[in-house]
Image (cartoon, rainbow, N blue to C red; front, side, top):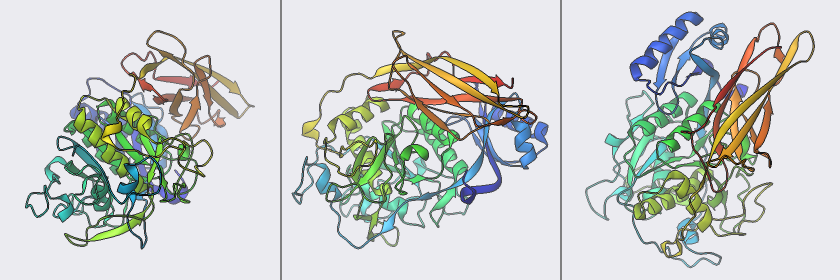
Length: 486
């Protein structure tokens, strides 16, 4: 993690996967591995998003854990935060997403309210009493369901929003006035505190809750971000594998979205921000990891100051919930859609060649959510990892490197090109990505490793992604490979 994002002395430990793992067995593994490493304090335990835990320990203990047979990988915990800027302007986003081109029509046409769908807002919480979330104008019943939610923040506020960001995001997903899906049920998953920041381990705990407890059909929205993280990418992949599409903000640093998590997660729907002129917002991240763009500049929605308060925010945090709302409408109409089919329909329906100055490698498509335009999307190609190969090389007497080749095939056993492979080494480099060639293979490698201090490193495949493709984890012949020093 970058130095300014690190949580000193706190780590996320990923355990080797056990299909029959229970909370008790994960507790036992956590206690056993920490004891062998020299001790520490466990904070969160994860069973579904990843199998593992977060803990406070010494750097020496963290290094010792890398050699533990129960441990797949370890990374420093880091800070994550919301990504929004308050501005003074009027909203236009809903008006834009129901038409193919400018000028705006001053209306938003929609059919279907997603009243059978649950949207998990992984954020700062939601002000449940806000008028935007009533079942109807003036009604007493709120569509916000704290009983379906979760809080990773131990400040006594439970799922209540004390920042405003989560309430704004929820309003864009499903507010009566400002929302895309007017009747969706909103479940607050509070992982960010009153100051808008939290920890990576807290976000993973929230995703673990969604993966274990989602009331489907459901969508999850993550309008947050931090540095690259294999553990977070894995958590997103496992929520998707549990049947919940995950929509994420691309990030607001005007950099390649493939360098940050969760935007780089292959099975996430990463959303960039566009302006009312159909130009990429200057702050928006860009690149091939984006699925599409959506309105994200000067977006009006609800906030937590009162039951009627609204504010204008800008950010990819505002773009993502437009897509989450559109996904909820699709699921409301066809509850049996898989996350891969939802992603493909959203991308297929998007208006092509709209966004200008999109950035290197970016799509130029803009979200389009008009029920009358829905079309049939072919079933996705099922892909899997069929082989992992490793080589090691001695650089000199003190250093060595490891290289891993990933082979991807379809259900018929044919090599597949254009697959984005995401993974990471347990030691020796940041989270990595490569794209398969016509041979269905691609290669990743470590930085230099100490011959004295690093006897081995383990590469783990986090996920596979690509247009019209879905990662079939049930038939993958390989997921990780250990490479010993030469």
